[in-house]
Image (cartoon, rainbow, N blue to C red; front, side, top):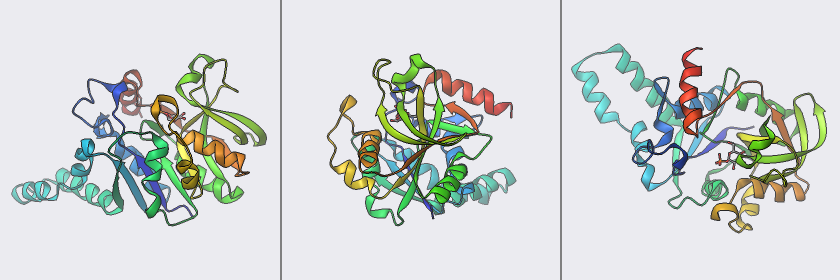
Length: 271
Ligand code: G1P
């Protein structure tokens, strides 16, 4: 059963500067709601019971967003505004499910995952990267179903333009399971066009096995002096762990770049 999700939130958000110089990118509004709420809704609707946020001391405003009880209570006491009461109830619903762990030096997704080790209870857990919004279909829910069917690790995937491969983790197919699901043979983080084994990219949803923690520990920092989850996944594959790439059905919105972020509000606004 996948009941826990983890969300790395300690990144600096340099691709969204100047918006992120003093503000957490995950709280930036997308069509009037902080981006992180879309991610939380995806988790909760997929049956996740506990969500672990990996934040840093620079991103404490994320914790404050969910811990503003006094502020809400005072306002609600003064004016019984239905909209504010509903918003507060929503925040409380999220808060009940969230736990915080810290990664004060941004040393990559792999290192972020490692911070959650002592809290992970089951054999597998879900990870969502908050830059990647997937709308219209619940990608996590679909991946959990695939995991249950094949008893395998799963990653969300999408075909990308060949000239953009260096922006993504790129994987190589080992075997086609059906139209949307493939066993993968290997994955490489942000390859050059020359190095890339394909133009199939990993998107920020992963169902990972607990075993990944020991693999992360054996890694040294790689590209950009960071420990990448992609490299730990490759080590697991080398150890015969099965990984499925799942071509998701929803619409992908890249909120981690300025153009993508601006576009995401436009697209969601039209839904
Ligand atoms: C991360 C992963 C990369 C993946 C991408 C999806 O990169 O490291 O493998 O393809 O998310 O958005 P980042 O966006 O943090 O640079």
